[in-house]
Length: 304
Ligand code: PMP
Image 1: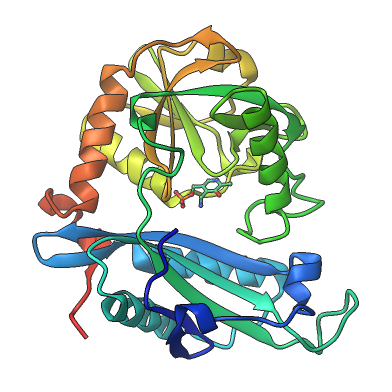
Image 2: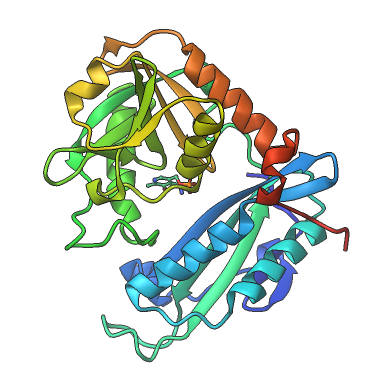
């Protein structure tokens, strides 16, 4: 990762290498934090953040789920995100918002820990590696997605990502590119950092949040793009064998964007199919401001 100039930390822009926390930060010990990943793209009007308000709203929802009081409002975090991207002078970037219980007390009780909030931005290309936009190999993980009554997957929270880390490491060690996790009751949930879609007989399907899938903003974008392309989309329960019999599969997320899947558990799906290619192209146009129907999703950065 190439450092940028600044990180927004607790209300101020600080030089990248000075954005530090104490080793007794509560979130470091207990995973008590919430996070967001957002991207900015070059558009004809200059760099623009894609679906910024939706990402900030989800950060606030995640904090609400874990009961964390955020010291900044939606408007503050929105303004800080724009200020940071302008100050770093990015044409395109990934933004990472994180809010966490900080240095104050040790032990499980968070009540005397302050809440820290930071936003970092950097230039980040293909999340799963170069060439992955031509298709990846998936495996069904032996790890199950977090149970909603153990740690709620609806909160994009830091500690629960250990579940994703375990699944991703298992997949990498076995020679796969990414893992797909089943819910505790055995339905397809999502990948370690992406939602999943399959195509069968011309219809798209993606698992619901009730299967432990994050309410993905890219998932929502893809639903809208597909609908506008006249492709039927259903959010429905899927099981493992649905992946083996799909005509096409792709995964999607802010960092990953839209990535075709070539095989699942060594069952060949094949080359990226026409629906996946159409959606990849529609997504690339939407995020770069090339399709006027989706301009409202873009917040243009004004130079600082
Ligand atoms: N699921 C998980 C577990 C994720 O970490 C992400 C990335 N935020 C997604 C799905 C995709 O969500 P989004 O499209 O909002 O980035």
